[in-house]
Amino acid sequence: MKKFYSILLASMLAVGVLAACGETKTEEKPSNENESSQTEQASYPLTITDAVGEEVVIEDKPEKLVSLIPSNTEIVFALGLGDELVGVTDNDTYPAEVADIEKVGGMEFNVEKIISLDPDVVLAHASSANTSTDGLQQLRDSGIDVVVVNDANNFDDVYESIDMIGQVTGETQEASELVTNMKDRMEDIKEKAADIPAEDTKSVYIEVSGEPSIYTTGTNTFMQEMLDTINAKNIVTDEGWIQVDPEAIISANPDVVITTYGSYSEANPADAIIAREGWGEVTAVKENQIIDVDSDTVTRSGPRLVEGVEAIAEAVYPDVFK
Image 1 (spheres, rainbow, N blue to C red):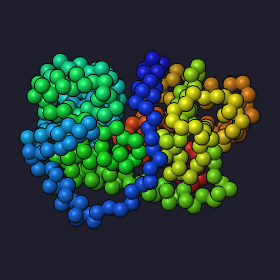
Image 2: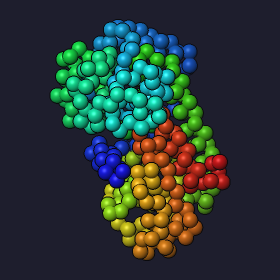
Image 3: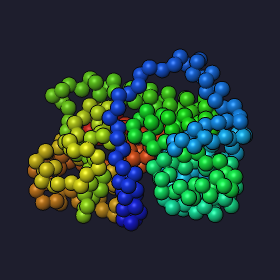
Image 4: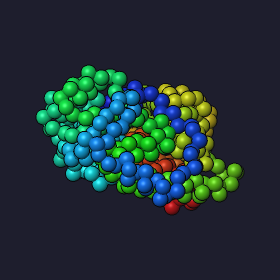
């Protein structure tokens, strides 16, 4: 289990910092115009330029899909297309149905296995496209359409990923509705958070990996965007995913500690933090405000990110978000 979490953390760090501090776009097309545009895009043959600039021509609506990253898989299921997935990665864990789908490897996928599944489209990802160039080209050479989905750096990018997969699969209306639902839930969170008085704003420390190599998340990350959304202060002001200086955390004295690795750890994160030398004087420790949230909902750039924001909001401000 520790080995799996190490691989997960390493992959997140290798992908790079998930930059997330852009302004949220608020201008949208009227719903009827948007639906008309989406319907147009769903017609086949479909030509789409993917995240690495490849122009992909999809002749017919795909019936068999392979996903090369869990976030793509979760989007496909959210669009109601789980039955069309014939292959997913070893790292796919959600929803439960993925356990019964053929596995095609991890970050290094099995080209021969994928070809044997005879998919119409392989949904790859920009985060690993540069290290999988040869394998993706082999799939293209075998006659399989490969679409590289963008590496989401913020919530707007996640919406773009959903729209792209919706276009590829012909489920554009479902994709539009999914994005609208996510935006509505995010707006609801922001409205509640806006009513929190300045004097009640809480400081938060997020721990994404426990000892011996403790990592946290700073500015320009998805989690920073989440804290901004719920009107909470990140005690870490450095950028990206950084290794923790324990003395700096103790000195910052956070009101709340959020951990994101409980499901991948054999030990209880809260117990480990409480036992650390000097941490007994931290407000979050003294007031028993150490809460673990599901890692996948706050790291996978898919539909469940909103659930992650809601979970963090409830952990930090339980009286506001119930």
